[in-house]
Image (cartoon, rainbow, N blue to C red):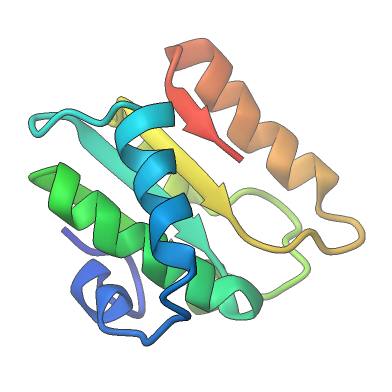
Length: 126
């Protein structure tokens, strides 16, 4: 599965510091306890792309249903609202992860995201 812009597969191809691999594996397999059949959504951005790539590789290994979004590909920053495309993907997810930088003025957008997490009782890492 893919989001606008770069696909999940393209994100897994982004080089990253190998020291990030263990933390990403721990986040996906231990903390979030992702199961193969679960729908997972990863949200990252340009400034955290290497972290996003490390997480993407682990999500791709853990789940058959993995969607990734690079915020900068989906909407202009700072976000004025949470992107509808990402919100829609989250509505079908059991697991989500937000690994992106915080920009001044984006708190309302992140609150929209966490409202989905809370309402749907999604396992979420931030």
